[in-house]
Image (cartoon, rainbow, N blue to C red; front, side):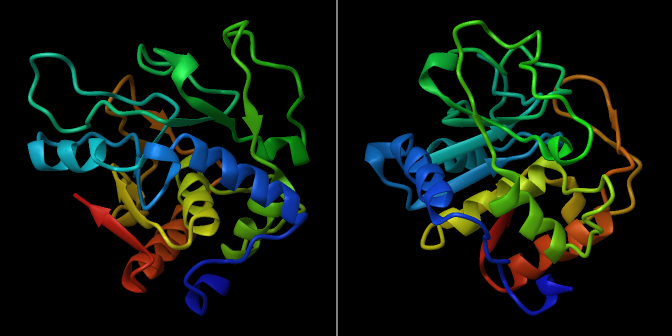
Length: 228
């Protein structure tokens, strides 16, 4: 499998798509720069003012699906800054998912479009909110190949791993931190605990052991930092 020999799999497809998405990410970074990125997963996190400050002090903060934010008066742990949100069509939105949406970039992960997923905009999407689909050919496909997945079957990476891949592939000079990613150390779980909302079953289209091995390889190679 590719992830054992390469720290980050290479993107494929038109360079223009990669450049466009890279420029979009940079435009939402602090002062138009992206020297540090923190990707906040959905796993519950214990309180930590240091972690919350690290998240909110990043040039770019990326969250996904049913994410949690620090509530006023509560012990900090998740931070509140949100620059980019990555969603999929089956998400159950939290109170934070679309809060202040005019100040954020929304990316739609749609690997199922290669198999059975329709192209219609989800009913729960705000009428005046645009989104940018994550192109499958330059991003989802090479990541699936690196994970050793069969492209002819409906299998693909979780939204979290896809988001991490986007950041390390598009911003190779940036410091990329991951926090709230339970699969790094728990690849055998059958359901995901979420910081907001009910547990979510791990669906049959994911292969968590392969994703966990890849993320650990990136961490050990120094390409990402995992923040507990």
